Amino acid sequence: MRLPVPVKVGLFALVVMGAYTYYANSIPQIQSKPPEELSLEGGNVTPEQLVAAGEKIFKDKGTCEICHKIGQKGTRAPDLAGVGAIAAKRRAGVGAKGYLVESLLDPGAFLVEGYPNIMPRVDRPPIGLNRSELWALAAFLQSQGGTVDITLDDIPKTAGAQAVGGGAQAAELKLPGDAKAGQAVFSGKGACIACHKAGALGASPVGPELTQIARIQTPEYIMGKILNPAGMGTVAGYPPGVMPATFGQTLTAREYLDLVSFLLTLKGDGAATAKR
Image 1 (cartoon, rainbow, N blue to C red):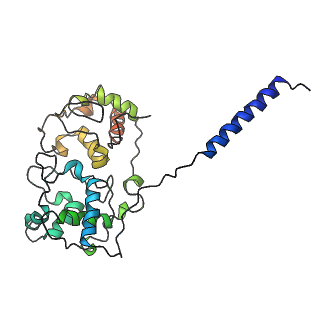
Image 2 (cartoon, one colour):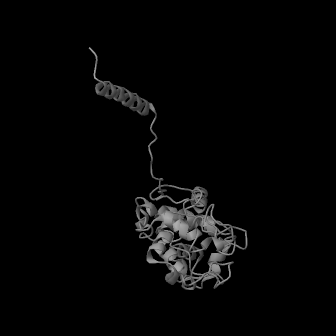
Image 3 (cartoon, one colour):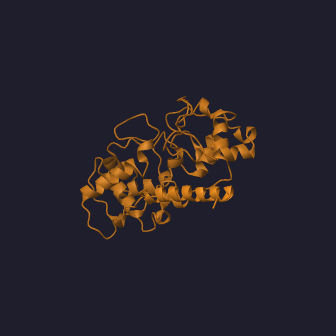
């Protein structure tokens, strides 16, 4: 018996789909997991282990190394060489431990001369360290020229409360902007590439590099910096008054939202190529 052509086509399609399904299911699946958070509460940890954990946080999740260096001048934030000893003399009546914890949880409480108030709280998004991570990071900073004697009790119990359960990723801001269109504004009408580098875009050193801006700054800072550059402070090492204060007039509301949406994609994980 000869089968009608439509039936033959249908049977052939089923065979092909079955073959592809079998092949797909035979490929080992990789389960995606969120980054694990460090938890030291209730456990025994030596000062050496604490410092090692803190150094890793300093370089990775804490994003501290993007702005701060140890033993290197000319960065956008203070050099932290010897900060463990310096911390004891920064503020009258505040010891090293108190100053270091305060500098992480309330950076604007005391500013080093020549540096603006642009550091975000590290226990809030976009960084979002938990209490254990704050303890380890403070211990690492204390180890730079000082004796590590900071304990978990020196970290407020309320610190890192907003970072528990996913940290900055859980509080990611979603704007009704188009990051792809914002990239076009960055390169075109906004002329941001005339002063800033963002991944593969731009090359000028006139303004701070923005390749990882979304990892180290809050959306509020980014949004405010576009509309009122001087009001958000000038990054150390760069001349003040260069960034135009007229974007609120020259950009439409849509272009502004698109530009902010693009900047919020800049986390240093590849070239700056926004997706819709």
